[in-house]
Length: 202
Image (cartoon, rainbow, N blue to C red):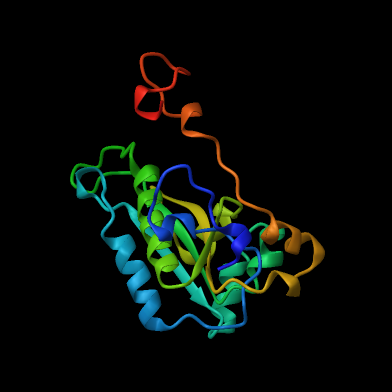
């Protein structure tokens, strides 16, 4: 664990929360198929509205160079620069309609986020790192993979083992060594009025 990335928490949390971070550098080390299955099994068991499970993932590993290159093309250029070193890439997609009645699922993006959070926590607990990104090319995903109408390609995900920051270029080394920061609870846990902190955090 990179000590600079250990969260300085104000209240106790589980290790896989405080140790989770999003590296730009990934080591040249594959992720085992067993670990990958467990990571996506964790995503499988996320909560979802009406148990619709609106998430889907398109996955590629560097063990299959052509398949990996195809998925890498679906990231914006700035993300391709660093994500090309990850041993596993994925695209998270959300079905925007409920399968049981065809009505819009307003929680679909939220539920994809829950599934990806489960995935991330399981990966962290296994010593892996996950870097999620919004910088993808949804139309390219749709064209290359035949994603159907009503399903939204939303996020890119890089999975692997964090690299030694000292082995990275200066720009990425600085990012991977920078301490993590978060707003205090008082700035987002509200009570009687919007912007007024809740008594639970006083």
